[in-house]
Amino acid sequence: MSSIQSPLQISLSQSGNIRRRWFNPESQRKVIKINGVKRTTTVVACVNLETKNAAPDNVVIGEKSKEVMEAEKRVLVGTYARTPVVLASGSGCKLYDTEGKEYLDLSSGIAVNALGHGDHDWIKAVVEQANVLTHVSNAYYSIPQVELAKRLVASSFADRVFFTNSGTEANEAAIKFSRKFQRHSNPDAKEPATEFISFTNSFHGRTMGALALTSKEHYRSPFEPVMPGVTFVEYGNIEATKKLIQRGKTAAVFVEPIQGEGGIYSATKEFLQFLRIACDDAGALLVFDEVQCGLGRTGDLWAHEAFGVFPDIMTLAKPLAGGLPIGAALVTERVASAITFGDHGSTFAGSPLVCNAAIAVLDKISKPSFLASVSKKGQKFIETLKQKLGSNPHVKEIRGFGLIIGIELDVPASPLVDACRGSGLLVLTAGKGNVVRLVPPLIITEQELDQAAEILYKSLPALDSNSN
Ligand SMILES: Cc1ncc(COP(=O)(O)O)c(C=O)c1O
Image 1 (cartoon, rainbow, N blue to C red):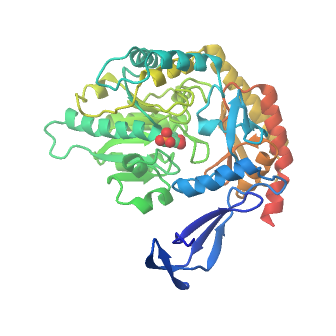
Image 2 (cartoon, rainbow, N blue to C red):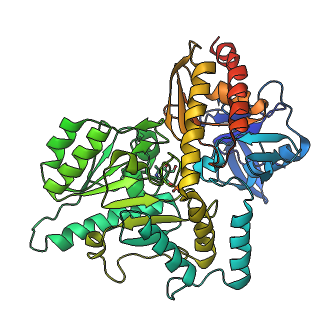
């Protein structure tokens, strides 16, 4: 049976390498019949564009996994360059693929599974709530939503909470709240401030507003025009930010206290203190995006606590409901007072099920002893990594706070990530693909972190064999 070739074809080789082939539309044309109708289609000269996320040479992909991967590429929109692993179950910090191979998980579903996989209290919270009430919409009150908001308010600078379903939505809410705040606080202004400042290496999400705040051009340019009025300034550059904010057009400044996707870069205390004062002077809001670095990951409940600087709005998401979709914009009363009925909303956000799960997560993570253990484990892990990996010529820097850690290389990190996976360790990349990102479940043990450091160390030769 003939089929029309799509210009981009993705296939899986015997060893599990993902191949992307781009078919040249100018190449040979051919007439074929589809449902009895003649169509002209192109057949194909193909060029192999990339073989990213390859399976390491010593790994053979099992039949069941292959089947899933083949089906995925037929029925899902090809937005993800997935790692060639089909994960089937998890327990604690371990994941298992369909063939039963065990992996130590230092990726946590991209900094989400803070309590690991299958935490008993989390399961209890989900099952009990699912048995009672899962969803009611925001047309009605529900107890878990109010209880979770009370806890978030009690444990942060914020006075009120708006729930969303993801990080990007939390940032969309922050964008809308910032603009509404400017209109509300300057009712007579001819042109209330509507612009935003964001920073190099930032990542704030994929929807049109959050995308506009995301620095990587590659993410934005295919979808332009995105939300107008965003200016990017070098992360940490006080003088450039000062010049811009003094123009008085800035509704809000969005900043990650520690950049995750951008490569695990931390702001300095001086920079965040400057932003606080500059925003106050200019009447702009300061928004901290703690979607990745917040909620215990740095060893403080909120990453900004270490800097002693507090925002007007903080956005959260990833770990908050332990793997169920959630986001939140936490705001001061001053911001909340600008928002009225109908200004924003969501059908799903803040559902009883998700909020009950989040209560279980927040109750565990916010315990001082839990947070202290994150700091202690993180410090020891960074020291071990420095000892074991620091002298490798490809390792430029090992940095991080608590359990958000980056290993910056002078070469692409993917050969190392692939080799680690071959040896049963899941880690992520960040930055320009040259940073290994380690964001394990916060419950990980010191022994598991030692095991991870050993696998990373033993996998380092992959950097040399691939740079030849
Ligand atoms: C700092 C930051 N903000 C926002 C987002 C977007 O979150 P989501 O993927 O849940 O929309 C991410 C996701 O990686 C993030 O790291």
